[in-house]
Length: 565
Image (cartoon, rainbow, N blue to C red; front, side, top):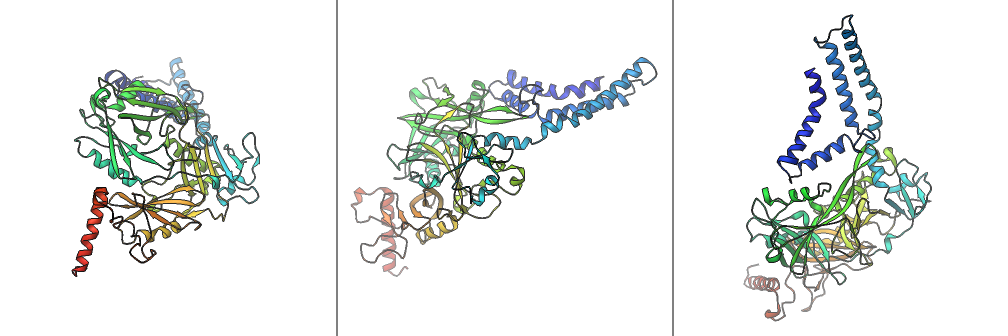
């Protein structure tokens, strides 16, 4: 009997003990929340037997089978002719048969299409935009072919058992995106320098976020300067102006102290505090960012919630947590389940959830097409590796969007045949924002190829020591890429995939420069990117970086004249 109790109770007892330790002995560390979410996700998504997960039925089947075998082979049970023997034999047979019944059903029902169910859920809010139905783009031909008439908001519906809305339009070429002033690499370098003078403080690299300015095509990068250990709280928020390569920091100090850190331990652990205050919410570091409200730092945690769907769980947006300092240092935490466009200066919809929605498009044309690599992915081209997609861009409507140039799955092509777009400046708890996939027609001249774009930009970095980083879409055929040297943006290049404009490079100060070998001759010829420019200005009017470049150029010329090469 003891062994039977162990078979049935070891797992519930272990889970209950772990949950109790997290709840009673170590409150605030989130252990109880992790255990509860794991139990829901793995065994009982709906909290009961209805819609139980496959792992639950697998556990039931194994326990029943072990029970029958233990009764059948346990010498303590007598299978004689008496009543006790007959009961023992009957119990063993019944439990083994019950185990077989569970294996036949409901275990297969719970496991059947469990992975596709995630695709079904996330594709409910996905809309595929195609320019034509008669000759659909090759990237979505499996979805469009055989589609049937749609309902409200959809011109067609895919024939497969995954909800797939298709709209016939050619909307993407008309979209325009404002341009960023600098690259992610420059921001990371500048932020690190801002944090380095403070012991125990470092840049929370996942929190790097572009905050758009009031005027068009302006903005700055922001990042949280996080503390560590048991005694160093968060320091503040750094903001990097890519136009002047200057960094400002607003600190948690004075009447807005903040005595916790994301990377803290013991009583300095902010994640544990958030888990204690809001155990139903979860977040990933990539969905945390900060900004300066005047001289006061504000941290925004974009949160998600786990919910049940069929025999599994899925994630949905759940709003934001606003974190501010206070006079006594206790974090001032405000939960906002709903945020409207323009209420906060940055994203309020999870970028990590957007990526889940993007990956789920692989299911839109069914399992067979998914195995044939239907769907889209981000580029792995060298210029895009540090930041391949989900760019936070601002449209002409002054709204914020996650914009991702996409290439087809299952190919080595570096041609952007589609764009994934999600509104990033609004959220409503418990819902998904619509994910729009705008596909370009086969042979459309607006299909940009990264190899071609890279070739057009390479002449600008020759002899400069710079590297190209991040081709960012500006809309239609326009792109911007950054020339980065020693971790700093020394210029950016605006170019056209269809050669509608001549590529041009612009230094951080705003002066335009041409590629080496293309500049006109004469004393007024502009210099190559990264070379001394504007050195005729009064030294008092130059910033430190301009002055250093000009002095370096003067030294090079003196060495050349003296035979130094």
